Amino acid sequence: MKNWVLNFPVVLFFVRRIIGLVDEEEKMGMLELLKKRRSVRQFEQQEIEQEKKDYLIECMLRSFSSRSLNPWEFILVDQPQVIKELAKAKPHGATFAKDAPLVIVVCADPAKCDVWIEDTAVATTLIHLAAESAGLGSCWIQIRKREYDENKTAGEYIREQLDIPGKYVVETMVAVGYPKAKNPGHPKESLPFGKIHLNSFGG
Ligand SMILES: Cc1cc2nc3c(=O)[nH]c(=O)nc-3n(C[C@H](O)[C@H](O)[C@H](O)COP(=O)(O)O)c2cc1C
Image 1 (tube, rainbow, N blue to C red):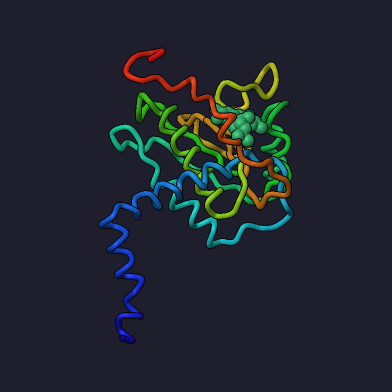
Image 2: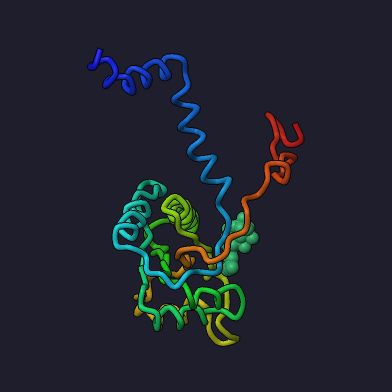
């Protein structure tokens, strides 16, 4: 009797698998994460534990890329003075990063892969989802195609700040930290279901 009680969770797992409930639960995990996720631009003055940084690192390195060429490089910046300089990379949409305890700069070598932009976008997305799952907040900061001023691109400015070799192009920065303020998740009713088409556009 005692053994049966101890094994109850295992028995329950197999019963649920047989009736198809486990898959449903796995799907819910992802949906729950996406329901909560919002961009976070205000952060607590709280350091991120090394354990969580290691978790983010493993998640970003598990990013998938075209032909597995992995053209990206990630620069984790946790020095407040350097972060303050990075937050000046463009006049709008980056200044909030000055208070983040961590900024991850995502760059890539375009010579390595013709779809490096997609590869870096995948990696940046995974960083956001990993941050959310670790109880952190994050916000995407677009760098490619953005200007520091009329003479310099945002990417060139960041290259100077971080000594990035010339062959790499900076695609994004991600500000990460414990959220000080966060908007509620988007309600299901607000989702643009009209953008879903079946078999043909408009179907
Ligand atoms: C490609 C891309 C570029 C973005 N660039 C910026 C940016 O430069 N600065 C910023 O504050 N937010 C940026 N965002 C965040 C969006 O503004 C945000 O995701 C959008 O408004 C939806 O809000 P939510 O993330 O809270 O759902 C970017 C998001 C994406 C996907």
